[in-house]
Length: 155
Image (tube, rainbow, N blue to C red; front, side, top):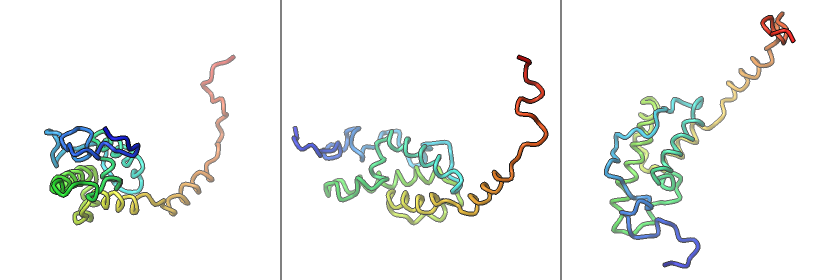
């Protein structure tokens, strides 16, 4: 047993352990849909990101996506398994984004690079939309209705 407090579950050589980020369950396949919500653009990026992060964490793959567990963390004998797991994660992410977005990402080589590309492109705030919403909120005003309304019960 290691006494190093920085020891991670992936420091083990046992890639067959469910605690290892390279472990693939027999039901994992490239067509798997991890979440039903599809990324359509900046307008739903935050909620999509949260949902996919939960799903990837449940599969113990989030560290690969965030770049905490890279190919450099593994033994040379596990490089092929890392490549297969990385490709599986890329396919899972691509399954949850629209074809229009996905077609521009087909040549990204790692799940971490794909994650970063999506974050850089879709997490940016849309200044025009913020201005438009602010203007609409400012223009809101109460018309002839009272706050109580005409259907409120008498006290």
